[in-house]
Length: 247
Image 1: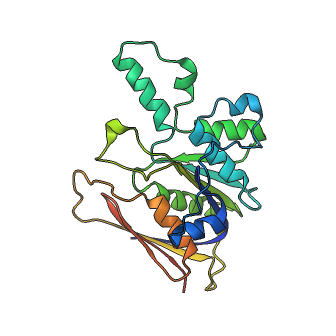
Image 2: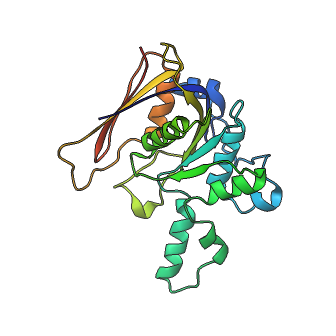
Image 3: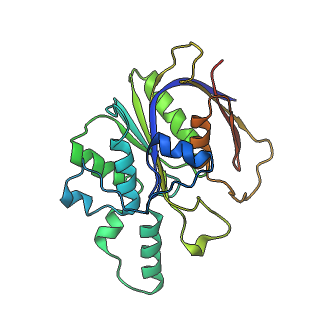
C-alpha cells in the first residue's frame, strides 16, 4: 500500500478550447463555452526555441507559465506518450524506408519539452520526466512527494498528453483533444483543508495482461480538483488509486 500526503498550492489546466479554472468549472457543469480551437504560444520560450515545439509542447509550456507563482525548487514533467504524433510520423517514415528527420528524432525523446523549458529559462534545478503508462499521473505525484521529502519546499508538476493517432485506436484513447495540467505542491501542513490531499495506491492481486483504457485520468483529475467533496478513484492494469482531500 502506498500512502502520501501533500498540499496543492495552485493549479491550472489548458486545452486548445478551454483555459483557466473558471472555464474548466463551466466545462465540468456541462456548459457549452468552448473557445475556438487555437494553438498555444508560450511567451517564456524564445521564438527560435518555440518553433521546435509541436502543438502539444506549446500547450504544455503555455499552461505551465500560466500557473500562479509557478517558480519551484524542482519540476516533474509527466506524459503517458509524449509527443506521440511526432513519434508516429518517425515510425511511418521507417515503414516507408525513408530517412528520419534528425530534428524530429531529437525532439521525440520523452524529456524533449523539459529540455527546451530548461534551456529557455536557464533552469538549473532538478527536472524529471515521468512515464508510467496509465499510472503516470499518480507516479508523478509520488515523484514530487519524494522531492519534497528531499528538502525541496515547492515542486511543480506538469502533466500533458494528446489523442493518439488513429492507428492505435480503439484499443487506447486519451480524450478528444490535447490537455495540459499544472500543479504546484508543497509538504502537507497536516491540517484538514481544501488544499490538503492524500493519495493511496494499492497493487492489484491479479494483474490482467492487457486492460483497455476507457477514460483519461487527466480529465478525471480536473473534475476532482473542482469538486471539494469528491474522491478520484482510478484503476489501471496494475494498481487501484484513490486521491482525496485529507480529513
